[in-house]
Image (cartoon, rainbow, N blue to C red):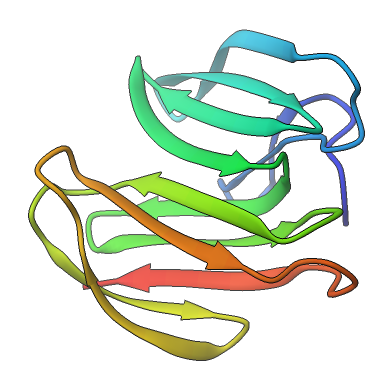
Length: 136
């Protein structure tokens, strides 16, 4: 799975897939309903961003495609792909420490800032989909 041609879609397991890093111009879709929440996605080759009920969830620079995003009370998991390495920022609980693993390997415990944001880099160039797991 790579880009999400419809920009955002609900998967059968209740997860979300979104983002298309091949688009040359910024494209967005608002008011996508899933599980009682409204999602908004903006995506193109330079940026991918997801909001839930007006709150920040995910951003990558440059743009990426995210598959099987699952958000739980203890963190989130997803697979990410892109044309080049990306800086990813996710929105979680503020001032909380999480264990972060990328590609099945721990990159350590990281603490969110007072806004609940956590940032890390993922090597994507030539890698296909890379699994990411963030948990308490």
